[in-house]
Length: 252
Image: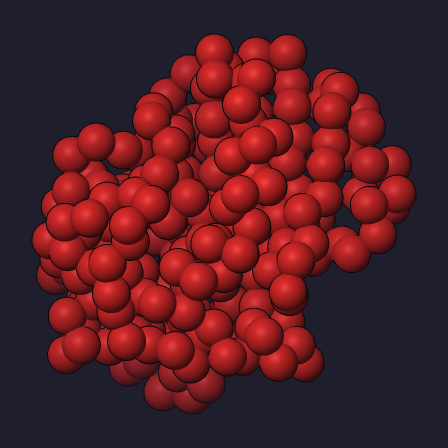
């Protein structure tokens, strides 16, 4: 798979696929599924309930973090640990969600060891849900890393967001009524980092719509069908993210 420099929807579709595949617990199945994309070195990090696949290509490296599995106690614990604190391994300005940070910390020694001889390659991080949050924190710790995430919750405070956006790139996808990107609440000082790509109910993607535009879309949809608010959980499905972005990339 050839990744073009900077942003593209082709890139986004590929990293969406990797984020979906990150839920695969069998390293053998994962490797078999992804083998046609040119990755020559694949490793599975699995420790204390936190998981990530590392993939090495000739020109770049990818860290694909697994998202929340509701039946896994460790994931539920991480999601519920919503206080924020300093990330001593990354951006120390502002603070991040402690549950998400702790998940990354669990894997970090093994990840950094694996990356030692790959410093000359571009690093991408990706993930869905909890995995998206982990990918953002991981990117903040790696010089020049680029993050693509899907259905990602808010990760850090406003000071952390500003510091991240100054030094790093994040492309953040939200599928229509997906409820997860709306938590943790703003009243707890959480903010989203990165550039928003909003997928509307028709599968069309709006690049960095203004907050007023987002509000208008939401109100319009609610007026047309008040019951659509109940779609907040179904809209979080990673398979739908992958399908919508793949379709959109084929149109571009």
